[in-house]
Image: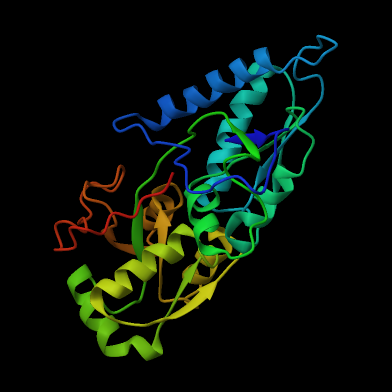
Length: 278
């Protein structure tokens, strides 16, 4: 979670690691860290007139469409923060350009503590490396408040997709690559990068269908218009448990929380494919 920085400069160096996931922390503990950080931010954000923060609603920008994992986390966390602060936090979804559109909106907001953005790996690390035209500088345009969560990603397939194991998936994709299509939250998004890494590892090229967020992509996977996608566990688990989609593997060296019986990439021979989200 970041807020607009008054010392914005588009000429500052890029590539600096900004958020480091803390291994072993539960989702609840991570959420509490956000709450504590926001409280600390409140104590340090008094204006020159010594007004207490916040005295009016705070806009929380989610740089993805509604229904995805970032949106889900944002709504859970902001509800609790709103209760603690006694002030409304308004979630505003602004998808596009792999999260860059919403992040740029936050970067250009007044640095008064009333606009924050739920960012993450795509916004802070991937986009600056992938997009030639930068809409914001992740180092100088924001004050970084806290890590809100980190998550494993899983390979999801439509419920009637023929392969039932990851090894079968690899063989099937190799044989039918020109007939398949996969979805992602957008060009350059974490789900897109994960797909590229896997496709390079198994030496295939599959048609990519980018969306403005994970929510719309998931809807098309549920409807059978996509064959597969790579999604975070927060939005994967409910669909897997409902039987609406199937999970074939966790894109991590360790079992995915909530899907512990799901094979990992390491167990399937993909030891270097660790593609989580933060």
